[in-house]
Amino acid sequence: MPLAEGEFALPDEVLAVMPRDPYEQLDLARRITALAVAGRVTGLEREAARLRESAADKDRENGELRERVALLDRALQETNSRLRAALEDNIKLSKERDSLAQTSKKLARDLQKLESFKRHLMQSLRDDSPSKMSGTNLSLIFSLNIADGDSITHTTTNLLSTSLDVGSTVQEGRTPRIDGKEFFRQARSRLSYEQFGAFLANIKELNAHKQSREDTLKKAEEIFGPDNKDLYLSFQGLLNRSLP
Image 1 (cartoon, helix red, strand yellow):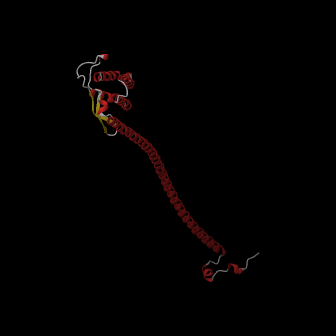
Image 2 (spheres, rainbow, N blue to C red; image 1 turned 180 degrees about the horizontal axis):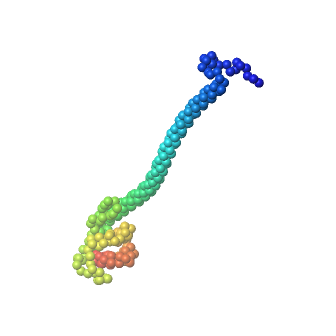
Image 3 (cartoon, helix red, strand yellow; image 1 turned 90 degrees about the vertical axis):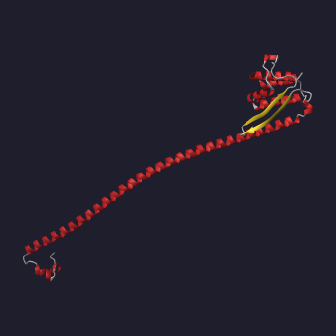
């Protein structure tokens, strides 16, 4: 269907500069279209370049973000490693603290035992009145000192004898004679606290006339044991010199 002439009406200003020849008009239209297309293409190319540049910037940002993520991952791993090491150290320190606490409690109990041993021993000696010991030539005089809370130091220990002097030898067992002080020094260094306490209690029974010399020697031999036979022989010699 032919188009109405009014549909292609152009302004008079345009018609004034257009050529009259239809072919020339077509050529002009082609040129105008080419210019329009070229302008559009140029605009699209500029937009594409801008988009490519923006995409490159995004790629760079993504790369930087990936590097930061990698750094943060490494930092997190190092932090976790240090945290595990710190937790292990805390566990070790906690175990050491518990062990030290147990050791401290044990030492405190040992100290209480030593102090109790000292009190009982001193009380035992105070209970031995001179009247009970007057009929016996064997006397025990010593005192105890607690040093540093872990050992008992006997500052003075004498076994006094009025019947014989030092220098001769004991006939039984042919054991060289030693004085009471040296005997008790050896006894306290070689016997355990329990053995030494039992030995002192044994002497107390003898001094109190609650047992005979034979019973005292028998108990002393049991207390000293086979490893301290020389101590037993020395004690036997001291007892023989002190008691008729």
